[in-house]
Length: 106
Image (cartoon, helix red, strand yellow):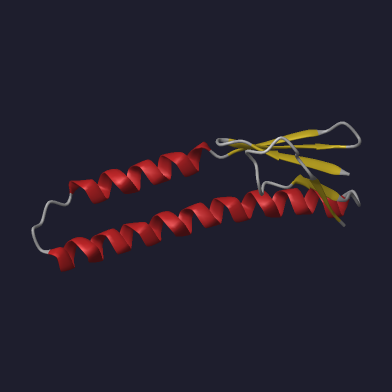
């Protein structure tokens, strides 16, 4: 089994053999910050141009974020399938409540 825990800047996975895998997600935070700063620099008074630029840099940010998350999940799945492990992820619905449930994927 592989247990996966997600934090704001990393994803930590531990398997039943004792291996711990930590994937750094700080590049996502940096990408979002850079995109926001780039959009904030445009001071045109034309709403159409400002909307087009915000759309462009929002798309770039989304694509880079999805690419990084895809690589993390692909690496975790490759590790799980290579070692024939199941994946355990915590259920994050109702995260503010006291009860925390666990979902098992096989």
